[in-house]
Amino acid sequence: MIRTMVQLTEEQMKALKELAMARKTSVAKLVRESVAQYVVATVKDADREEKRRRALEFIQQIKTGEIRSRDIEGKTDVARNHDKYLAEIYGTWKKSSLYLFLK
Image 1 (cartoon, helix red, strand yellow):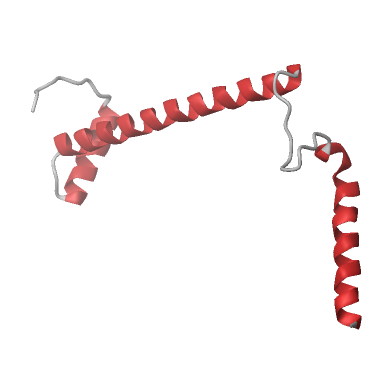
Image 2 (cartoon, helix red, strand yellow):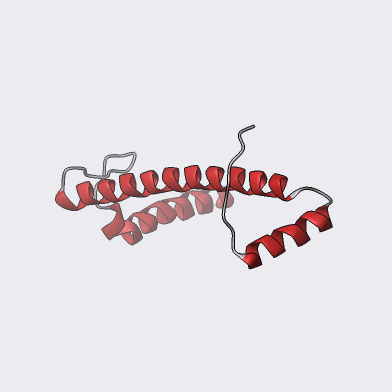
């Protein structure tokens, strides 16, 4: 381990000492655990920020027309005409189900 010097406020040191006594451990161990958690959280935040940046870039490409989204059948107007497509699907389903029921 590497020895280091850290300056804390009186309130921080008091809280650390109380926590260390309650957990029956050292202040140094609590500081090491806190630093480890901080490092992990910082890496996760960096990953989250990268994903956010990529998502915003993707949205911008859609807005400018560089990327056109399509469904499996190649339709590009599903967002605008979803009610029409659902009616077609459920209308067909109801007819076929009714036909099977009446047979």
